[in-house]
Length: 82
Image 1 (cartoon, rainbow, N blue to C red):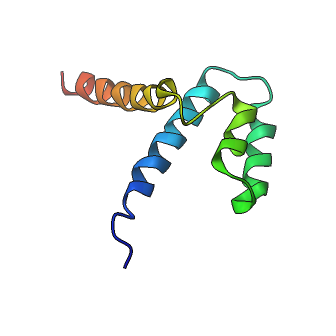
Image 2 (cartoon, rainbow, N blue to C red):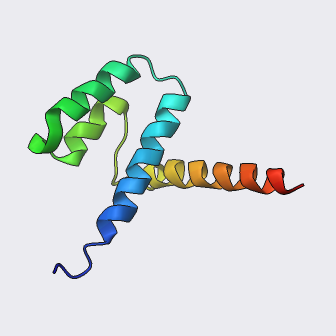
């Protein structure tokens, strides 16, 4: 048992959403950078894995990107109700 391990889920979700936002914005070479990140696995710190995407998890704007993606999904769902 690891107390408070669940923060990793929120971190991972925010990270994936920020990456998806970067993809959706059309970052040149995104696919190759993403595959390189996957190949690196756990051999690098997240700071080094995110750098090629121009992302920095210490910057609040990074988290805003991820939350904006979620807000957009909620807006889409709410639009379906009408």
